[in-house]
Length: 506
Image 1: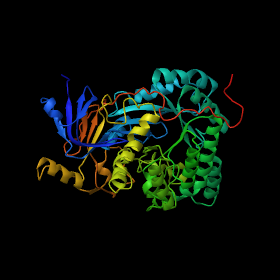
Image 2: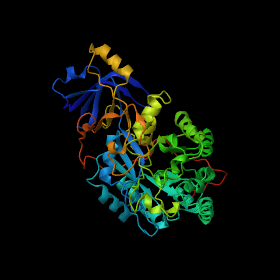
Image 3: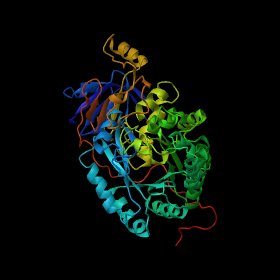
Image 4: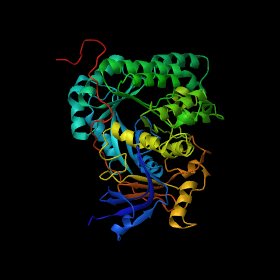
């Protein structure tokens, strides 16, 4: 007889492809052992936890998270950031090990980020590499070792930010290496020269308030860089993912590339669904709270386009880009009081990523629950080499689960099924305040937003780590482990080039 650690009963299971009502989930040794009905009868001594008919979804995989990086001294640590992750239904984060321009080797960089994360994470985690000094030695000798021995199978490249920006030729050199190693290539696409040109003129005319950040980073800077990144990827025959997209025109470039069957992926983030650049005006200096890059857009049409991209498949993943800095701190957002160029870029969003999309997408009918699972869990797991352990609910997968509160319809169905008129506990809607969250940041852009649902329980490899109606975060620092990842299962090079010349032929 299997050693069953926990049975989730009365679940409405949803995956990226299916929905299974009235299903039980048996968990053994941190893995999903069996799906079925009336499983407590098979394992009468196993502890149970009733979902009361509510959705039980795969634990979220947030594949774009910045934790404890040197360029954000007031941001979340690995402990506080991952604590907020599990309180928002995320059980896996992929964060960044960031190379400085002066770093001649990646090995000390990776070891330092291991040191910061080891024993401190509340959820499972892995690393992307930010490459800002991709020397031939690193590309030819170090990346192959990091892929094979560390299981780091993705890099992020910047087309903007002077300390990290790569020239087009450098981007192509890196792409050639990531292609041969089967690594996923992420690109921050903004035109640095356009932004610098606009910035100099804004500052010269005294436009230094937070709203000027949006003026300095107009849509066209993202649109041009996105088109250029797609062209470089087509030339190099390399699958890419354009990160944190915000512009309707840029998303259209991605969509057209996809219709040509190019291996192109993209992501967007919660703040590009809900907020426009008006948030940067704010009272006094408070607009600095919402300074991020790409900037929040001026038109609500861009917000609608991001929603459309989630529905029609333009966006493969939905990530938080959690890159926070405290507001009321001299090294945080208030560092930029003299000019917007000194405001740290980024927003907190790890904890609110899943609930915001679930409430505004699934519960309103704007997004199917299957698409929600695809965007928040299964696709990032597939894209970043975790498709054999994370991102779905099936026997053999890690028992990473999120139990939501039953909707009124689910509560009614559960009551009818069980004959109980009470006991199916829905959630009372509430307006969010920053004090409710578990990060170590002094604000949230979602302050005052009404939420009609929230993760009731978060389960990491079979262990309940968050119990909203009980003690809240019941997991401990160190519950999370490092994940060695493999190749993407979503895309491969096509072996098709722009003309008869094969740049990789020997």
